[in-house]
Length: 324
Image (tube, rainbow, N blue to C red; front, side, top):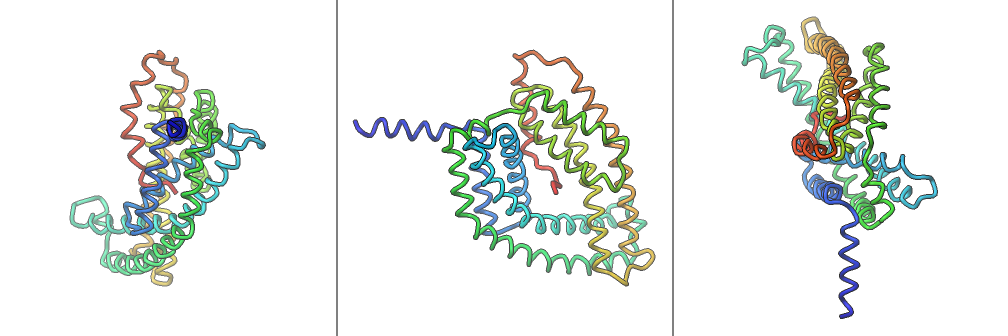
C-alpha cells in the first residue's frame, strides 16, 4: 500500500514533458552515446542536427522566462554544454561535407554532368591530394570529439534528466511559438533580402536557420507553419550549398598554396562558388515572396490545424545537409 503513491508520483514525473519533446531528448541521448563510441559521418550529422533542434527549443524557452525563474538556469546550463559539444562536432561535420563535395566532383567526370568539361587532370590530381589531407584532419577531429563527449557525457546526462524532471523547464520546452513571433522573424528576413551579397549572406543564412526552427516549434499548432518550414528549408538548402562551396574553396586554397595554377581545383571551386552564390540569391528572393504570401493568408480553421503535422513530419525528421 505504501508503494502506490510513490509509484504514482514517479509516473507523473516522467509525464512532465509531452511525448515529442521527451522523445527528442531520449533520441539525442542515444545519438550522443553512439557518436561517443564511433563518430561516423552519419552519426555526427544526426547528433549535430538533434543538438541544434533541442537548442532551438531551449533558446525559445529562455526567451519566455524572467531572470529569476528557476527554469532559466536549468535551460541555460544545458544549452551552454550543448554549445560546447556543437563546437567539437562542427569540425568533423565540415570535413565530412568537404570530402563529400570533392567526391561528387570526381564522380561527375564519368556521369556526363556539367562539371565534366571543367575537371582537368590537374584538378583530379589536386582533389586526391586535398582528400588525403582532409582525411587526416578528420581522423584527428574525430578523436578530439570522442574525448569531448567522454568528458561531457556525465554532465549532459544529468542536465538532460533534469530537464525531464523540472516542471518549470518543462513548461518552457512545451511552449509553442506563435504566428505573431513568426511574422516578426519573417518580416526581418524580408527586410534583408534586397541588400544581400556575399558579405552579408553568412549571417542571413544563420537567421534563416533560426526562423526555420521557430517555425518547426510552431508546426504542431499552426497549419501554415508546416508550409513555412518547407519554404525555409528550400532557402536554407541553397544557402548551404553556397556556404559549402565557399568554405571548401578557402580550405583548398590553404592546402594547395603555391600549387593553385590556372585550370586547377582552386579556380574551379571559385567558379562554382560564384554560381552557387547567384543561385542562392535568386532562391532567397523567390522564396521570401512565398513566405510573405503564406504569412498574409487567413488563419486556417482550428479543426484543420492538426492535419499538416503528418505531412510535416518527414520535413522535420529529414535533417538538412548543412546546418553550420
